[in-house]
Image (tube, one colour):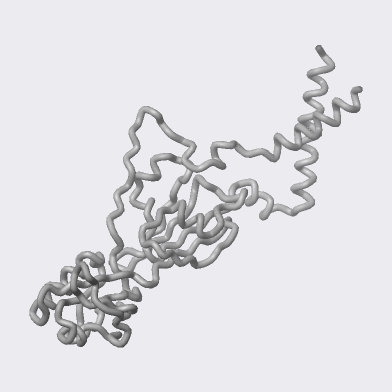
Length: 263
């Protein structure tokens, strides 16, 4: 009977020693019910150097609009609701090191730091000199984020949507492994001035949804650090770490046995 009790106690001790607080393994588990959490507002992406923009110019006059679209061979007809010409593929424009795109007829147009809405308004304003009621649509082609570290599928991830939050970005990488530190995720973001900013994000806090880092921006890098348990394992000799774990389990079991036998 005593051997059975000892066996169960040893197994229980090993399990307890290998456990981590559940709160640190669950997203948004730390929440003060007295505080109202306001969700972050999506501010829109700012155009950066190296961005590839898909831009399409539409207008009522089919002939007049052609010089402003590099790809005019793929016209598929006219939109019945607007009467404007529609094209399968918009033209691609790369933002150069100086922050400009070279646009047909208009020449260099400064784009860096603008939102897509601001650039749309700027282009439509200039195009009014040549077209009646021009309409410009802009899409960012290369919206990529990199998710590295303790995730199941690390690497650069491409998103069809330009409005993704930090949890969706982790989802693109298959979510964190069991060893990922959810309390201290590093986010590396390039600002409009070209400098990199590194911030620590605690994903166990519910107020993350009100953080300016809740929504991802193009070229963001997420690095999920290993938790303390894995760091200890990585920095220690595997055999030595196993020895200490067994000793700790036996000491815990011994303490429990002594306490039970004294009753």
